[in-house]
Image 1 (cartoon, one colour):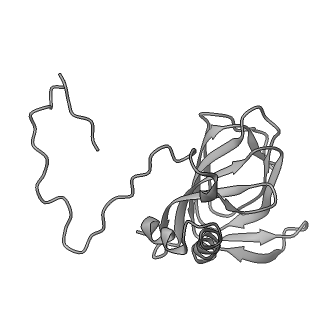
Image 2 (cartoon, rainbow, N blue to C red; image 1 turned 90 degrees about the horizontal axis):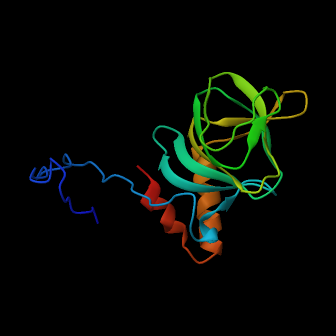
Length: 177
């Protein structure tokens, strides 16, 4: 529930009566997305997991928090669409770049980029909020495409994980917009 205003100058403004147009869906609100029940974290690799917070099959996009509690490797991949990342905690990098992201750092990944995402050993787990658009193309050591991972793969992995741990596969539906 929204906090009641106290002395704020806008405290007497009335909310809009008709918030949503016919056929629209409500917003997704998720509190403290990088915390909570560990069952919500979907394994992505042996060392990294993802907590979905918003999914759009129509746009082939999702938003998640990627997490690794120690040294980790997501994959070597290429993406034909942009990616946005905001580091919440820990340290991570791409082997192909000269920077290491830490808490508070933002990264915009341009379309057409290949890289290898690694997570460092750090006192805090690596947690990064990502907005992923389009598929990730998995690459071998020579940079050749060997597979892909898109929103439909993400949905299937999340449904299977939630079905197996008591949350229920239909939880994913609450995130789809």
